[in-house]
Each structure stands twice: as structure tokens, then as C-alpha cells.
Image (tube, each protein chain N blue to C red):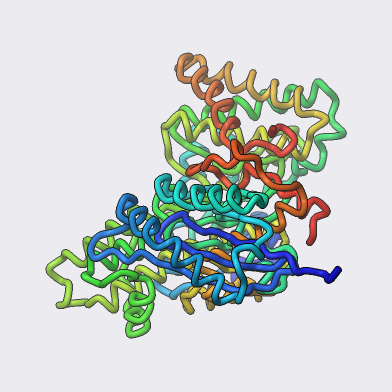
Amino acid sequence: MKLLKKYCMGIESTAHTFGIGIVDFEGKVHSLINDIFIPEEGGLHPALVREQHLHHFKDVIKKALVEANLSINDIDLIAFSQSPGLGPILKIGALVARMLSQSLKIPLVGVNHCIAHIEIGRLMCEIEDPLTLYVSGGNTIVSAFESNRYQIFGETLDLAVGNMLDSFARDAGINHPGGPKIEKFALKSNNYLQLPYIVKGMDLSFSGLYTAAKRLLESKDYNNKYNLNDVSFSLQETAFSMLVEVTERALAHTEKEEVLLTGGVAANKRLQQMVQSISLEHNARFKAVPLKYAGDNGAMIAWTGILRYTSEGGHDLPETIIKPKERMDNIAIPWRSDGSK
Amino acid sequence: MKSEIIKEKLIYKGAEASLFYGHWFGREVIFKYRIPKNYRVEELDKKIRIERTLNEGKALIKVKNYGLNVPQVYEIDAQNSILIMKFIEGEKLKNILENLSENQKSNYFKKIGRAIAILHQNGHIHGDITTSNLIITNDEDIFLIDFGLHEYSDTIEDKSVDLHLFKRVLISSHGKNFEICFNSFLNGYRSEYEQVNKPECNQIIKNIHAIESRGRYIKPGERK
């Protein structure tokens, strides 16, 4: 009998991305296809996103199989994003996952989206035990592994930093996604305008910062004494300094030797530079997850699904109920119970 | 001219500030110097350091007025983000707790409870009550130090969080002595706070449980 590779199909469906990733049990990614909802105006309307995911999921799965050069019958495990995220959208992923698992008669495993971001980072950047700054449109979390959990050391009390940047971009008349464009504008300025800097202990608050930046756009001085480049620069500098301060404190406290930057906002070069600077100061190795794997994707779900499945098996159908609000520090991490892997 | 302000040696280096021992016009002092961070733009960096130095200095001065044992502030050099305050000679409670008698523990923690109650009644949140931030002097006085995370707040939630964090520290660093220390602490806190506002005091203490039931603060062993 010849030895067959085992494959896991991961389904990401928590927000704007419907992603399929096919990863083998050794950690090699065979395909990664994302279908991203881009609003014509405004932000993410869950009902509209859900509609798009529902119409596109079959094609995304087909594309992923073609890219991996596999048939659906080669898949041995289905993993899906079970938590946290927007309820109506999580439901689509769960629905597709249950359907595939039932019809193919293969095991099914639910995965926490935030843990998946950390696990794919550990896999891709070849690091063991990092302090992680996870920044995206939906989450802003400083976390490290301790006592068998990904413990949360600091987090946002209101808006996620990516959400804040996107909302500001919309107010400034910039199309979605706004983050990368704000980064470009910011490069053209070094005129720092005063904005509120809010760190409460180890937690962050971005809502006041957002409002203040928005007021700068509405002021009569806008395009007069200062312009969009200056506001973008000041907004980025303030928000990122807040993130980095909390990250540094957590790094000093946990004494980790590696720092991982992940999530969609990890693509920002200025943020990378700042996190690198504190990592150096604390003699820690710094890695930013490559953009392809830093944003939401199916490969991270597949890989985390493999980790969970090989350490404690799959989930029964009743256990696959979606958990839109689940915190990642609620979940035990059996595959790292020895502190490594 | 010979300077009267002399920084002599670095005694502690934290993520945000360095502490130096030295002399200020003949007095033994601590220089708390908030270090510039080169990852952030200079204007922002300077603003943060000035604001925090001022806040901490002002908070210490206010709190001293309630008769609490905190370091006397001699000088706030906000522009250079340096706070100069009295050097408190003594031992960190953390280092001597294990050697205290039951009686001493109960007395010290009652006193600490009363001091925190006075802070809270007046709308101050210390933000980092730990046994490292409590100094026992040779005269057996207790000093509360490090107001770097101090905030003004009169909400039940903030006060409960302040108590809860202290409870966590006691459990994690002094598990064996937790019961007697925390119970004495709460007794002291109650005896002081109840004189002013009994219902609020009860709410604050009750709310500690509510905070603990939120996932973030549950210890792994206590979780299902």
C-alpha cells in the first residue's frame, strides 16, 4: 500500500473574506483562494456579505481544488472558522463545512479564528513561542502562550485598529480598503498634529482617536493649514505608538524571545518598523507574517484544524455550533501542552 | 558651581521609566526618569512623557494630602520627564511577607486596606497595587509607591478592578498567605469605606466576583 498524503480543507468565513485553503498534515499549503467582499459604499453589511459568500462558495472550493490539483475525494479533514466573527457570516462557513463533512463522510473540526492567525504565523515564520500583536479589521490583541492558553495581555476596549483606519478612510473619501492608502499618504508627511493617545493599563481605546481625526477632516483648517497626508500621518503614528507601547510592556513582562506581527494591518511597513524597534531593544527576534497569510485566509484555518484534530480529534455535529463572541483565551491548546510544538 | 542635584546610581530599569538613587539639596531622593522612546515621533513621545510625569507628580501630592504614606514629591521636572521624590528606605512587602507573623500580616494588610479605601473614596485609582509597590520602613510604616498607572475615577467598576488586580497578585505570588492577607485587607477596606458609603463599599466588593467571572481573568485551573 502506498503512503498517501493527508489533506485538510480549511474554510474561513468570519467577515469580508470567504477563503478556502488546502494544507497537508505536514504543513505544506497546496492552495489558498480568497473571495473578498468589497462594499460599493459604507462598511461591511453582514447580510450583503453573507449573500456574496453564499453565491461564491462553490466556485471558491472548485478553484482551490484545481490549484491544489486534487479532487474533493482526496480531502481527509474539514476545518472551519467557528469563532469569533459576524454571526450570519460564520453560519455560512459552518454550513458549508457540515455539508462537506457529511457528504464526504470525513471528520469536521471547528477552529478559533484568532488562534489560527497565531498558528499560521508560527508555521510560516518558523518561530516557536512568540509574543503576538494581532491587528486586523476585527481584532486588536496582544497575546502570548502561558498556562496552556493564548493569554490576552492587552486588547482594544472599543474599535479594532483596522476598523478605525478603514472608517477614517471612508470619511476622507477613500475607497475600501483604506488602510494601505492611508499608509501611502502618511509617507508624504512628517507634520504631527495632536491627537488623543489612550492607553488604559494594558488596554487600548481607539474610538476617541477616530472621532478626533474625523474632526480634523471637518475643520475649516483642513486643506488650508494641513492636509490629508498630515492627518493620515498623525493618525497612524498615534494609533501605532499605542499598540507598540502595550506590546513592549507585555514583552518586558513575559520575557518572550520572539515577536510576531500578524493580521491585515501587519502589512503596514511603519508598524513593522516600530515593532521591530522594540523587539531589538528586548533582544527578541521579530517576524511579520507574509501578507498572503497575515490577512484572513483558509490556510490558517486548515493548519489549526490539523493541529486540533491530531491532538484531540474532530468535533461532533452538536459541537460545531458557531460562537460569534468566543474569546481565544477561553480555549485550551492541547497541541502545545508541552509548551512548544 | 557645584550642583546640588546629584544622580548617583541606577537602581531599577522598567519598560517605561528608570529609577535612580541620588541626592537633592542634601536629601536622599529617587529620580524617576521616563525614557524617550525612539519608535514614536518626537512630539508625541515628549507629550506622553510630560503628561505622565505631571500626572504622577500631581497625584502623589494630592494623595499625600489625605494623610496617606506616599513619597513626598520634591520636584517635578516635566520638560525632562523627571520626577524627584523622597527615597523611602525599607523593604518591599513582597520580600518580607513570608517572614511576618500572622499578627503582623493581618495588621499590615488591614492598614493597606484602609489606605486603598481612602484613595478610592477620593476618586483615585492606583492601577498597580502589588506587594512590590508597598514598602515597609524600619519604623513599620507602610508606603504605597509607583503612581505611574494612577487614574481619576469614581466608578464601582474601576475600584473593583483595582482590588481584583491586587487579589490576583496575592494569589499568584503569595498563595500560601492569600486567605489571611486578602481577608485582612478587605476588613481594613470595609472599616474605612463603610464610614462614608456602606452600600457603595458593598457593591465594589461584590463586583470583584463579577469581574472574575469574565473569561479574561479566570485562572486556567479554575476554568472548565
